[in-house]
Length: 198
Image (cartoon, rainbow, N blue to C red; front, side):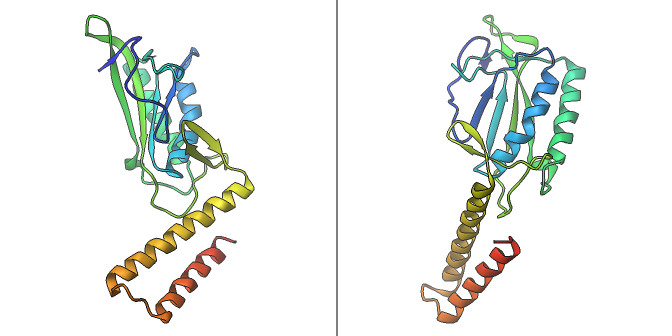
């Protein structure tokens, strides 16, 4: 249960981010941030951003949203996430409204913590916002990737995919790989690097 002005038993880390909404237009604030965090989680290990929780002390403050505003927020978030490139199945994201409770343990009318859940992407492709920016989620921080960082991210993802493929082949064929099988894996990896422009 999320109680007003009480802290939650969760910290900002690789999988959780908190944002307090201070402006007069919470829908625009959330809409303007959601794709950056979604991209960061897609490019990392997945996670959730919670709007309506102070990041300084994890206190629940909530976001005031009536029924029409919640409907509008659902549409705005959905539209914003639909512009992420490469496209992701829109059913993998979750937008949830958690009621905020008062000291009397009753829900406060139209006060919510808004949670956007994003799974990790199993793709070796890097995801970008509609403004062609790439982000990753590190320990409690969303970080924008620069050119060399983008290249490093792609190389690490390709190497990881190659190792996964090697493990699958080893399991399927036993622990001994022939030189031909290793050559095939190396050819696949080289092809992936060429197609990524590296």
